[in-house]
Image (tube, rainbow, N blue to C red; front, side):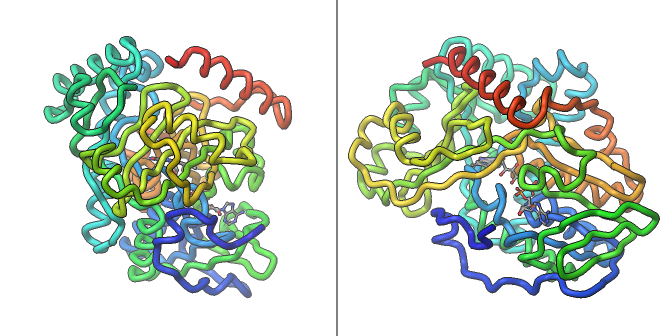
Length: 424
Ligand SMILES: Cc1cc2nc3c(=O)[nH]c(=O)nc-3n(C[C@H](O)[C@H](O)[C@H](O)COP(=O)(O)OP(=O)(O)OC[C@H]3O[C@@H](n4cnc5c(N)ncnc54)[C@H](O)[C@@H]3O)c2cc1C
């Protein structure tokens, strides 16, 4: 495996950092965290802030996984809307889960402020409606948020309001959240890692964990070292499938792809007069936002076999031109992909495999805020404050049907089905 960051726009503009010392020899700690994305970094930081000695072991680099590659949209809510969570888990659970997602967004903002993390944070996210049924859903969500979730600022936009922010004919309206925001995800990961180190966490990079040994003092083992601890936190998400058999089948790694145009100059100012982030309401969605240099970062598609297409630019460009035909002919400077961990019910998974081995994963495409929160909740649980941890932990999850190739085939068929259902 290459330990270099993928050749993304994010890696091009993030500060260059030296590889941290790999794990060598035998060590002990109160807690050992496996995985250096937001889940692992948030857990490690929160534990260190509570006085625990923590080592974090990452197979590549901090933010090398989804946390350094994503669309950068830090949004409240879960991958499923309020109506669906009500139907699946009942009103009481929705009333606990949704505010936690807002808390997650606020937590990211708080950490950026506390750590003075320079990550291009910009406010405003639109859920864009393509079809009348999308707009109905947006209106229902807004109604709920206003009446029952203390979210008076959430707005329903009509076509003209959308067009005052982004110059496109594709959307008939949408739901605008002025308190959600977007950022450079890799810069944010690197900033979190610095905060964790400042709090005392020891981070090892280029140290793939080969196995986890359960017991009173569980241990993680790499090819050159071990860490034995009172607790293990597994935060490997879609990049760690197969590390422990108990989590096999709990999440499905799905490839999503992004590209960055060249800086668009004056054209950019007409295409997006306001620097908001947008994700449409389709199941297989498009998402995009401007960068500080006036590039358009455009992502989308979902590859349920977990593999990126060979030519990402060719796969995404028609989708970008469907939204912004005026961008025909612009140069694409960067393209890359990453793995999203999705759960069957699209609700994140948080739990314990044994009394001292925890995991947090499967944010189903909404993980910037939620991984930061769930990593923090794992720390709270370890520290003995389990009430908010229990809101997520008591949700029952089932495994994906089938295994191996068969499972991918079933999900690829499911993707085809949803792409037919999605408004064109
Ligand atoms: C293309 C793309 C676009 C996305 N867009 C958005 C968005 O706009 N908004 C949003 O909220 N979310 C988005 N997401 C999802 C979000 O990025 C993730 O939910 C979040 O980053 C998950 O963080 P994590 O720490 O759990 O996982 P990751 O960031 O994937 O971190 C897991 C880490 O574990 C390490 N690891 C795995 N196995 C081992 C091992 N054996 N030993 C040691 N280390 C190991 C990996 O190298 C990796 O660094 C997107 C994801 C992708 C891929």
